[in-house]
Image (cartoon, rainbow, N blue to C red):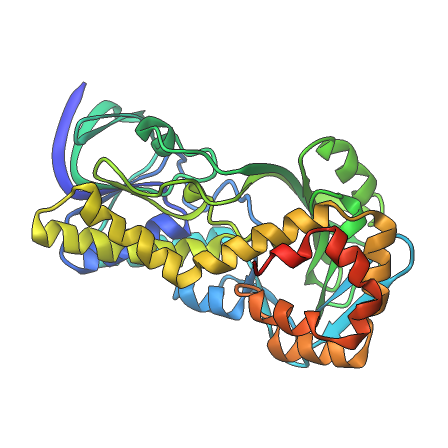
Length: 388
């Protein structure tokens, strides 16, 4: 085994969370190494690529990765109920994640971070990570480790940290379709997968991205869902979404960020916004710990408090929301959509809707008289506990 030079910070994973953490650490003058198991940053793509304005801004990239912009959404029940809201302006970006990830990696490299591709993390021994890959077996020392290696994180396993509460399996395809779609709106199909939902994201007038997530029978559900959109499949991927934050996000000279920490938003499955914000908070903690020469749990716990103060409440509310949704039948979902198809509710969604921080909108909607007819359904699902 080759003994490599030690670094101040070693980051495992070169997705947006990993490169954001690396860029911040390197910019502060810390020697920083990013380990990535794949040979090309940004691939394989395992993301729907729909980013809120805030999430896209957090990436700090050019507009080159942008494939389309959307300004609203349509939610459709298989029983006929639907809800369309149109903000009249850009609310989200559809991006090429490969291009976006590589731009973020270049920014980290420009800040001084080093990259080691085709190098897989295998284990931790003291203050060293063991890797295996194109360079053979290596041992790399660090003062602080940042785990950004996704939902099936090997770093969290090696540290003995808890796992996320729920894991969803997902399948997604890019399709070339004969009939044009409206590129302004995303479409959501709750009945496509009762544990989550299905989606259709417009990439161009005749190119769409369709997918769904669930806990069982995902392949069969996806095949039925894809059949709604006749066309040629250009790209097919599978992936995993962790829901529910892991019980502890620090320990043993390590901090866990992004999907590895279970930071995917339960209401959408997106993890870029929370991943990057957690990464920069982890970098702030890493910088402070290295300056102080302290790596005990008391020092590292500042990171957990920071992300809890930032977006912890939103993730907790989101998890309760998706749990409540999973208790609803198709008929109940249809009834709620019909009740929400009210001008005052649509106005509130347009004015206060936030893909990354939905709790304020939920509070406002619960006070709308138009929803009172569906209140029994909402109460039976456990919605009353969301803000308890």
